[in-house]
Every structure is written in structure tokens, then in C-alpha cells.
Amino acid sequence: MRERVVIVGGGIGGVAAATLLAEQGVAVTLLEKGKSLGGRAGGWTDLLRDGTLFEMERGTVRFCRFDRNARALLRRVDPALASLAPLDDYPLLGPDTAIGSITKLRAADLLRRASAGRVRDLIKSDLRRASLLLSFDPEDTYRRLDATPARTFLNELRFPPAASAVIQGLVGHATFDAFDRYSAAEMVSLFQYCLGADAAGLELDVLRGPASARLWQPLADYLSERGARVATRCEVLAVERTNGLVVRYRSRGVLQTAGADAMILAADIPSIRKLVAASPDLAVAAPGLRSLEISLPMVTWRVWLDRPVRPERAPFAVTTGLGMLDAIAVHDRLSVPGSRWERERGRCVVELHAYAVAESAGDAAIRGNLMAQLHTLYPETRTARIVEERFLKKRDSPAFLPGTQASRPGVLTADPRIFLAGDFVKLPFPASPIERAASAGFLAANSILAGWGKRTEPLAHGHVRGALASLRRAKQDLFGL
Image (cartoon, rainbow, N blue to C red; front, side):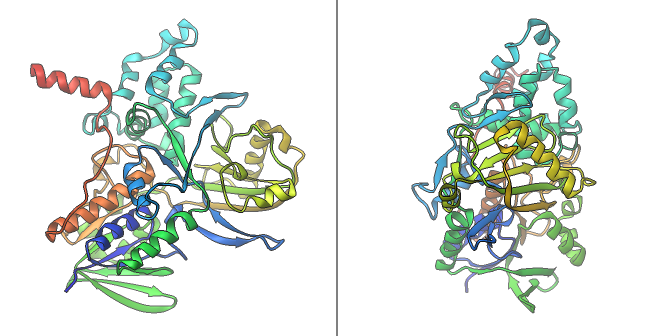
């Protein structure tokens, strides 16, 4: 009889786990609350007033060149990665001008920018403290910096403004929270991942089209072809551990149950909280689940404008020091099918992102702030008329609050049948959010497969330690210091 695994949550972590398990002949049931797979990186079909169909998403799915496990997942349905297009220019924009490009940025480039200012500005910098940026160590960094907010740590460095802006722009697109709510240790981990994982520096790719068509539907078909059951629009109600594992859920209004030999919890944090409240056994098996927090609300505002932006505008840009605005995407520059709407009518679709808005901020205030920043950066939009818009405000991304690393759960739980996956999971190596989710999914699946004597898949990752930490470790090994 085939071993049975129920996976709760069809985002990147859940799908990655389901893929490895289904490939090894495990009977997988994947339960997703949305209309399709993808979680926060998913999408859905919508309709403009003129009858044009389009795919709406919460943001552009970007892959770092060293997102090894996320790319390994994509290769299941796209072996040549032909669905990815390079972001040749990834500018960082400030209040007055472009600060620089993040594309192929390396740690040495950042140091040059830090030293390019006036000598007295550099003398003010705390270079000893700044060395911690290049000294990531899975144990030492969290011991030293986890209790410190990222904003406090950046201020302590006393870097020239341009260098500080680059750091904030570099890691800000992956924190999805305010820097005063984000652990400095996690920021250093992201810095190590972005600048220390590859000698070529940071390089990014985007999907050539909607994630639903390029990624999620092909992966759903891939799983179904291997015998997995993919069930969407499922609300998981409770998990019972008394007589085996039983998952109770509601699918399209019908109450159902699924028995399992193992399960992987890969849902978003609000769903996990609700499930833990209804399933006391889960809190006993994984007490760290109770400590999980969510980040501040994230906003995606897509606007259809009656005229194009200037030709030199980049497909995607990150910003710093511009109110609530954190990123701008111009859809006809992103190789997005359906941009015919813009080309045929001489219009454009611009998407504005705010990664962490105050809970008290109203929608009208957010719109006003974002549009004012767009007008500052792209003055040609000041006279543009909004033909249509979609405004999304969600609060479901994981928070990495200062001082919470010790209580953050990993893939394993106290129950050898229950595992965790997703971008909230503690990993033994640095990773971006998308890579963290994919890696956690693969780790959870490997743990199950190893326990059943089945073949596992090697897990790829970059350098675990920063350059200075590796030198320090080598010195200790060599001299016993």
C-alpha cells in the first residue's frame, strides 16, 4: 500500500514538497484554500470593463540566479528555464535621481560606494561594526544581532547615505516589513545571500508571463500526472493525531476527511494560527507555531494609464526614501503576454508596491502617497488618467521580529509524522523568501522519504558563512584560536 501524505497549503513550499514525494510514488493530497496553486505568489483571472481578460497577481515573481531550489522546482516543467527573462537593469531610485543599479552588485561594489563619499563621512563609519555584514555565521550572527532591529543596526554603521540606501534597497525587496520590526541578523543573512552567494553578483530573472500560466498550472498538471490529488478551494478545519493523522477540511461546502501517514503544514501564517486554535494537538507537536507573527500590510496597486511612460523606464525598479513606495513595475517591459492592451492603445500598465504600510493607513491615503511618488519619479504620469485599477492590501507575510529566531520552528516537529514548510521556517543556510519556501519544502519531503527508506534529493545552497566569518573559522581551525 502506498504511503499517504497530506500537504496543507499549495504555495511554493507545499508544491515543492508535493513534487518530491509524488516523484517517489507517495500518495499525495495537496489542499489549497485558493482557487489555484501559488499562495502569495499565485494569480487569478480578472476582467477589465472593456472585456479584456488579464491575470492579476500580488507582484512580479522574481528568481535570483542562485535560487537553486526554486529553479530546480521550475525545471520540472521547464527544463531549459525558457520561461525566465533576465532583468538586465534593476535600478534603485531615490527622491532626486537613480542611486544606482542593483544588477550584478557585489559586496566590493558596495564598499566602493561607501568609500566614494567625503573622507570625513567615511571616518564616521563604524567599520568594525560594518564587518558584521560580511561575517554571517548561522550561530554567531543570531547571537549578536537577532535582538537588534535592522534599522538600529544600519544607523550604528554610520555609512554615507548612498551606501545605506543601497543596503535598504537591496534587502528591502525581500523583507516585506519595516526595518524597525525586522531582525538585524535576518538582514545580514539576506545581505549574505544577495551578495555572497555568487561571485557574479546579484542577477534576477522574471517570468515571461503570468505565474499562473508559466508556473502553477504546469506544476499542477505535473503533480496530477504522477498520481497526486490537487484540491483547491479547500478550507482545512482541524488536524487530529489520536488515531493516526486525520485532516478535516471543507471543499466547496462539503465536509471531508483525509487520513495520512505523514503531513506537511505549508499554509500562510493566518491559516496556521486558525488551524492551531482548532487543533490543540498541533500546538503540542510544534509549539513554535504559536510564536509566528505576520508583517505589516503589503499593498499592490495596478493602474491602467491612458498614455505610456517614457521608453527608458526600467521594467522593474526598487525605491528608497520615497514615502510608502518600495517598487515600480511597468508591465509592457516585463515580457508579459497581454501587454497588447498597452501597445495597441498607446497606454501602459504600471504596478506600485508598498511592502510595509502602517496598520492605521487608510486606502485613500495609501493611494495618494503612492501616486505622488510615481509623479515624482516618472513626471510624464502627472497628466495621465487612470483608466482602470486594482488595489490589493494583504497582511499574511511572515514577520522576522527582533529576538524571535530562537522560537522560530524548523522543518521538524516533536511528532515524527508532522513537518513544516514555507518561507516562515528556520533554515540552516541563508535564503531569499522564495528560496526559503522551496528549500523548506524539499527538506520536509526529504525527511519523510528518508524515514521510509526512499530516495531523497540533494539540497543545493550557497555559502553558509560570509567571507569574513569563513576566514575567522579557518583561523580557529588552523591555530586553535
